[in-house]
Amino acid sequence: MNANVYQHFRPEEHPFVDNVGDWLEQVESQYAPYLTNFLDPRQAYILETLIRENSELKFSFYGGYEHAERCRCMIYPEYYEPQIDDFELVMIEINYPQKFTELSHGKILGTLMSAGIKRDYFGDIISDGNRWQIFLAKESASYIVNQVTKIGRVTVHLEERPYTDIIIPKDSWVEETTTATSMRLDAIISTVYNISRQRSKQLVEASKVKVNWSVNERPDYLLDLLDVVSVRGFGRIQIQGIEGKTKKEKFRLRLGVLRK
Image (tube, rainbow, N blue to C red):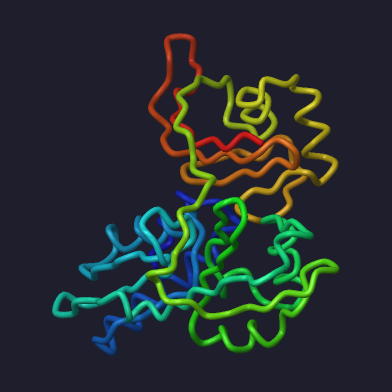
């Protein structure tokens, strides 16, 4: 990668930029496709930007269903045409005693992470309100299925299911447009959830906010395109578009919002 590409991205994103550079080099030198692990929307945006600016290679994203948030990416030379099977995804259903207990996205995510499973080995966790499904990378699926037998105190059984059994996820982003004085994390949270700046600053400093699945305790952290913010107790926000500024110098934003 030439040195200029780094200036478009945050310092903590530079190692990922380097990874993308390695993947592109590998595809170009071996003239064969490369499949990434699961990427979050921000990583997917960085990858797409770098490929468009630095190479003639093609790429496709797939996360198991049409509006998947976390996807694997296939980077490939012109001649190649990827099929869905090439993305090597497995869909797992969590069997649990539905009458007696409830699962949540947070509990499932926490269980997987504490079993030592890296976040980029699994994709979206979806639910229709009762049933829960997870998309996994094929190469780690059997390990995860054997490893996870409890979520919290609940005994569960993970089972591979065909794609024809996919549920329709209940949570979907509602698109909202708004204006914000700043792209600071605390400013965006206070704008979207209509709480004071002081309250949103407290939430951030109390480790109740994640940006792209990592806890972020900096109220002044500047958000950017396709970042996903989750605020415990409130819901989630995705920056879907930054569309210039108003006359009063406010940012015009297109957001995806999930409210609890």
